[in-house]
Amino acid sequence: MANQAFIDGQNLYMNTKSHGWQVNLARFRVYLSEKYKVNKAYYFLGAVDDGNSKLYEDIQSAGFILTFREHNQSMIGKKKGNVDTDIVFTIMEKVAEKEKFDKVILVSGDGDYYKMVNYLIRKKRFAKLLAPNHKSMSSLYRPFTPKYTDFLDRPDIKRKIAFKARENRP
Image (cartoon, rainbow, N blue to C red; front, side, top):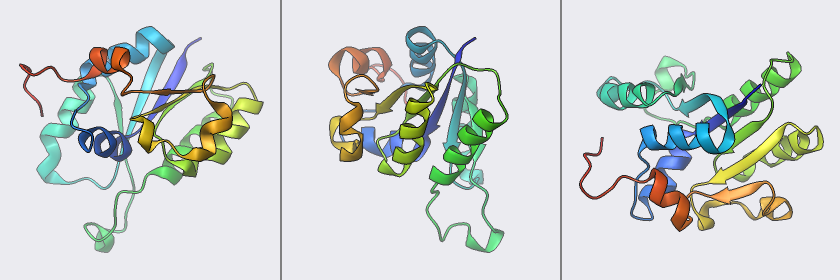
């Protein structure tokens, strides 16, 4: 069997961009496959915005399964695209339904996932929390460090997944 990855897209984007770099999604998908044996990678975003169709194509072309947060039409544009509960629900539904996969890789540093991560560790269904950078990981995860956590801004990882200076960015 293989592992599945769940990416909090806003958390990944904002916590790399704010530190002066951007993830090359195609490289990142390869990294997840090679390093963590990920066969399915879900990329969660807020509400659909027609102005971002190129971004959505890029995410899917890189090999991610794009998942949007459901919003009431009247709330679109007024709420941030908080996908935390969607990610938790999706993961826990897969576990409860006994979907065939080994472990979860979560890409986010958000402490809102702490209870789920703790549960999955106890059930031996959690592989790694990949925080976008050292500063973005909640202190709640300290007890899990380093066995269950890593940082995408670590020089050796960043070198593999970041856009290079000469590459076109989305």
